[in-house]
Image 1 (cartoon, rainbow, N blue to C red):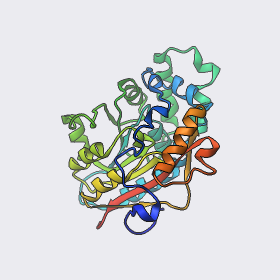
Image 2: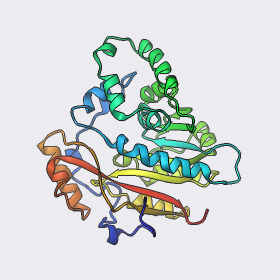
Image 3: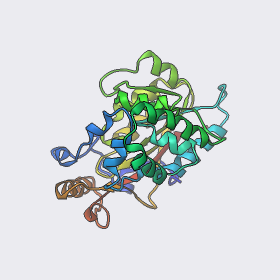
Image 4: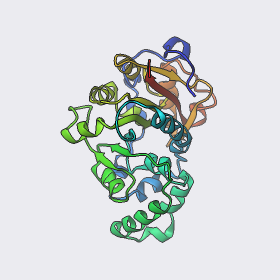
Length: 293
């Protein structure tokens, strides 16, 4: 649950820098571009399993809670409000939100020897059944946004996303399809994508909204979320920060990345002791809602 009151960078120890807040240090963070270019998520889970990538696990109960709260809000619009998952990759958050399964279940499935030799077509066919059998009765419509066309295509093919888009809002405005979808969106979610999308993306999204939009975001402590907070505030959204804890994301890949994480957190006024100093990225959880229902 967010702390009551507006976001305050002094209170929360967050520097009011440009998005990222780590100029000159970004080259120390490992990139995983290749695992998002595959036609299915086996390489994604295979690469991230040894790094204990876990933030979707921590986001699962938070997103279920806030999605239920947003669905219960009578906003005067017909139909249930949809969730838009930003940087959705292969639909991991959608899978965990709308299905009776855990992130551990997904790791076990996609790293299992039984699935290793399947073609993508065979995997898609099996995954359609796998997810359909686990669909929760309280499932909500979920749209996905990611620049990786293969990842979005997979999530659509197996039924994790109701619609998916590859618009790069850091470079251009939403296309007609995304604009139409945004009229149905009541909740925007994010896990870790704060390293790649800025206030430009969030401004483009809320500019096109037709329903009251809430935002629930898990953001690495190595980047500043303050520009997004300012952009959301300009659209009447008040952001609160869960100061009770941090949420581990994954292990650092090597010593160079660990040193990057330590320096980036310190540059934003944070304390890396017991977190990044121990070789693991951590996130903070922010929630943004309209000042008035």
